[in-house]
Image (tube, rainbow, N blue to C red; front, side, top):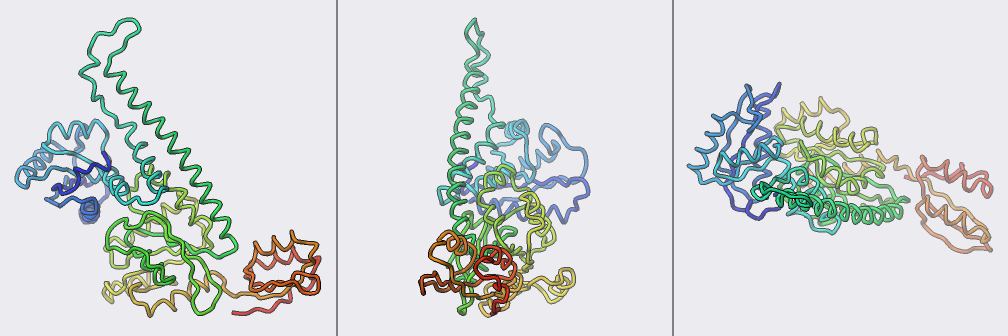
Length: 431
């Protein structure tokens, strides 16, 4: 079960299956990532077993010969855990554990275990527990089956069946309670987002361990946790970039994506990922040094599409270029013209990154001063919600407001104030 402390310090054997058009090199990349996940969860790697293309065994996924190979490796190494890169059905887990002297988990279980360990905030705990229970519910086994064989009379049913139903009922009630809690948390987060709508927002998205938190620190000096490991950050972090006296913008760090991310986790973390929905710009961060860079690109694009963000304004940022060869860097430049190439650990590159972000935001700020009668406080409130107020004061019986706004928002401001200042369009633009 995800979160089981027994996963710590256990030797783990990785098991992969080469499916369809998948190449052996691609499978090796997947197993390399699976190994990183296992190590992040606290296991040590004892070896790997791979089944190439061929007939699969529905009861155990891998053929009996491969099951025996896993058993022999476990006996030699002392490993107590088998980690499959494929999702396993409850029956397959049961059959494998009956045939092997070890516990069996699949990729989704492993990812859930990591999320359980990494959750820090109340929201993250709620999201992870909800995903864990949704994943567990259809996988409840008939632990009490030996009791259900008793004869049942009128008004009685097998005790084992009753216990299983009770377990399911308890989990369903807990899911309902956590769902209610998450809705309340989502409402609170939505209210906080409303308070930030007058500010421009840049959301960092991308594959896990691509360097999003390092880029957040580069732009904002946030001091966010940075670790060279998968899923170092689960909770979104919002910080303001306000360098050189220029108009600030918010930078939002979000949870990283990964291939085969359990859909229950995507559903549970939707409220967190919605920080990116309201963003004016997405910074799609990619680890340029990863051999699976194109796979990471596709995984992030697919996940963004699932969240309804496929058409949102986006800048592609290749990070960690200090780790790649000149030939790889040249190929990436050719394949992705217009992308940004940086090493986020190099503080001298922050100016280049910031200029590209501001350019994508349309950061030509129009500055204007208007006078609003004291009899129109509602108009003043609406204006303040739309723009960045530089200074305000009461002058000659009017609210005098100096503000900045972007050209893309001038029409809205103009419509609001047209009855007060018909010549508002003649504002002064300042960089």
